Image (cartoon, rainbow, N blue to C red; front, top):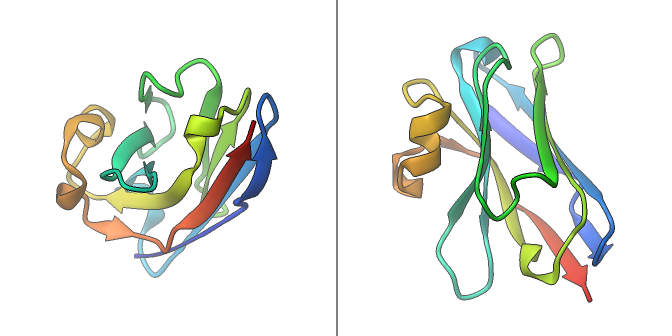
Length: 127
């Protein structure tokens, strides 16, 4: 599956950004989808995941309560709505998909275990 993320850009602390990811080339409903991010000088880290039918979501503690992941299986898209942005949200955000990981295991697996990655989209949050 090919993944194309969009929606990054400059945000302000306390503001909101919406990231979108379009999938193609695979049966979308076979994939647990998610988002990872990589801040400057840091390793890639899990942000959020959503199950194949969208009924289960998992969030990193750092974004829990202020972010929502959703998917549209008819449109083959997954979205990450981020609210109450913080400067520490500044990172390159990656849309990911995997056929074997579930939402929980995607949240605890190392980034190297996730099979499919889109090109990242940069989010910069100013204070």
